[in-house]
Image (tube, helix red, strand yellow):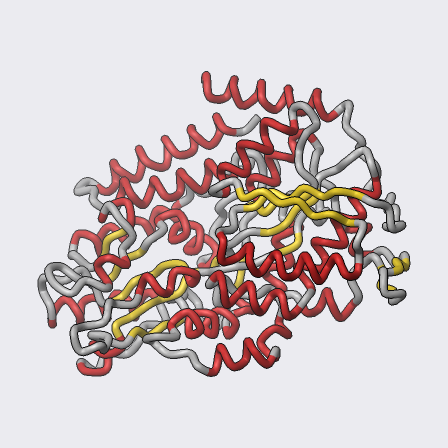
Length: 461
């Protein structure tokens, strides 16, 4: 109850603060007029990525020399969230943030995030420093160039408005020991039924192994809901729909796999399961489901002979229905905050538009970060195409991961974002963690789902 009270008080505080904030209609767009403005940008990038960012800020300033970009790297995504949460209460939020959907939903308790629809659709003409012009909005070609699943994430907040543009993305992929699979004539599984059979086959060959490691319990639960078309959450009351028999059934199934020694997860293993996948001795795994952006962590260390002990293969995760594949969309997007000066908002939009639609920036940022570009046409960029062409399961494993991600671009999905969606995600993961090792699975299911629903309901303001 205390948790619910604190959440409600925070929401009230933010909402009262928002009464003094400029809240122009989503249809009110003031075009950038060349005014001198300073734009603050909070992100989580390390030095390798800020080097790329600096180069393109310089290019942007050739077009708009009066827009001064000042960025701060605040650590992790939660650090960005926590600082902005504090600053919103006094109207001191930045102009732009690199963030996740549930963070944007929280910022919007104070109606602090600028809807982007009118900017996207604006036909106002802006003149650059070199005399060339561009429209404020996105052209039809630019909108169509975004990978659809990534772009649509910005509109998952329940009111139909667009609040973010995608910056860089990742997903989950299946890493497998290609050398072992080929030596033992094992086919890469494409469905969960096939995965179960492959786990049994691997266990028979190496009884001491744990065939599969799955890093994110939450992703697994949510992905199964999506693949099975079973309810998870909605961005309006009653919010939480995941306590149903379809979802209990797949948890039962995974419990039986765990009891047979077929799999483990990050929480149950106590670390990223890539550690099992790349192990050179002791207990090991031959498959790992994890982030596409972490491909280099799924590659074993070279031996004394300078060669990798095995080649890594990468494939799409197993599906419930291969004819309608679903794979989670992850990774940060960019949101813009409302400000009293409309020229700050307009300038912020131009910078966000530049980062998300400039093919060269998307290519370089992707290669430096391990994330996937958000534009389809980046695959045709000469430098990035060469990067993809060099893909392999060894030195260029990051390129192989990106290649798989781009090939499955029509399969990406996102979940609704609202105040409480992050709690739903955490509780979904808890259900998997609690139920997999349970010997009395029915009691565990009842307790885990009931507790998860209670915690989620407490989180809603």
